[in-house]
Image (cartoon, rainbow, N blue to C red; front, top):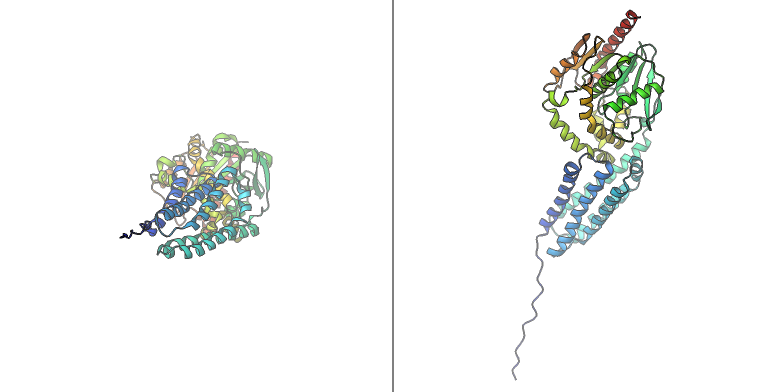
Length: 451
């Protein structure tokens, strides 16, 4: 009997998918998803939303790597399930619990060592499981970035906890509409000068000017809600609400009117709103390279700049948690006195202050519109001081128009100064102080003549 040999069973199909393409596509999809979510879908969201969505987007990328590599290649990257699950859990927890700044700061003692341990474990796992050039030029660099983020986060947490610059200086805080606001006054005399900081500035930015103006009259500097030594407000703060809070702050501190208001950048806009709402209390005004109520129409480049920063502002608190603010802050406020410079730089590195800036930026269009209520300052003294360097198109003409608010006005251009130098450069800050002193003197003369 002749037997016929049977062919062996057909070997199982070998998975030969290109692992490198899957690695690149997976990680790129996570990054793109994160950018779309925080810059397009929910721009300028609260910190917990931004961070939570970024975690979920990155988790999807790692999950995609684990799933596709297992299904389509002979190099399954099952280890990627661990970062996928970890980031998904963290992201979901942030979105569900909605932690505030204090909780996020407390978590800064926990997440950096956990992230560092995860990054080290991932590097070891990928060395065992992945045989591709993407291991050296993509996966391991990504793991190194995670480790660097952990180190930066730990550094930020430790330095912020040790930073004596953030302790409140001389001055007081007052309960205003559910939050406490910081106010510091020095010098004696009338009228009292009120100083309003620009965007991204706080009360220490006036150090040169307060020291000079206090020689001739009383001068007060304050921090808006959510910035500097003032607590955040419960809700949005447009220009009218800021003026209302300032008025209540002055009443609580028993600061007698009349006032000469001086504002730098957007602080000038806030002072215009204050003057429009309380005209009998404002005896004079100084606008230091002030924003204009017509910011969106008078400056052709401003709408695009505003929109771009508005979208990016939501990720700034998250980046500050990683210590990025400590790196960028060393380039600003360099001309201030040492103590004030350290205070401003410490605040400028703080996630809390970036949250305040994000909230304020979102309300600027409303504030500019509200400032248009000041159609005339009458014959009250007004000095417009304009920086001569770094002007955007339309800025000079807008400054000229601000001068028309009063029939008793002067427009002075400081040719060597840029926008920031009017406060933080000692030489140019003296020019700003001189303008304030001139308006104080004019207001006093007017008061004497009308007695």
